[in-house]
Length: 197
Image 1 (tube, rainbow, N blue to C red):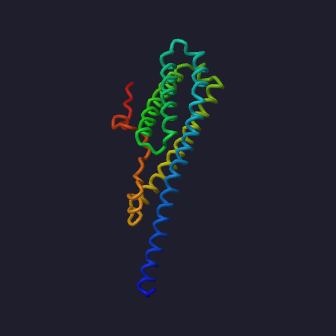
Image 2: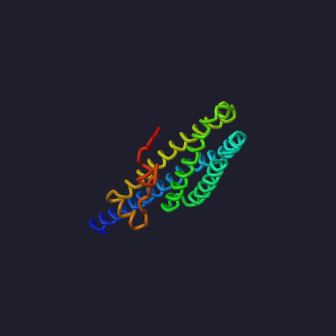
Image 3: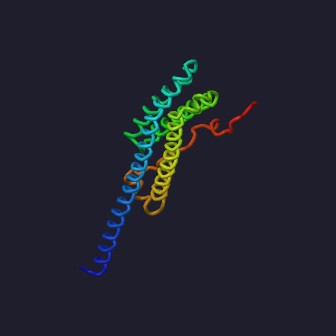
């Protein structure tokens, strides 16, 4: 073999090793996204398990507020269904969008329930309700941190898949940019709440 052939063979081997390394890095980053969604999934399930207990405690005091309680349960069911679909395919943008929409509805229903609770001092004083509310708030914080970690992993993957020369491997093997989780899904939801007294 001539020197030129050795050099070409060496360049070909370096290219193959680089391509394998780039592919493996993209796979690792994509798996990190799925793992990060798994952490969100764990916290959402915890949250969904707390909500029926919260509603049951409130139900004893709020018999005439049944529509509010029913709205919370219906929103919980919708969000849990969307979460189960998203959990089976955490890289599916449509499923993540549906989950975000269902979570926004659930957040609104819980907010209305908490506003109703504020009007009932005996309910507000209930120790079980206070404990459940604190645990729910703690879970909400965990969900927020898990979403941030998910978005960090998505950013790392999207950056890696968009940078040259890894972009070549990403396009050859179908690594497409992943969507970030957004706090809200519409421009109307991003507007500040108008308080009228």
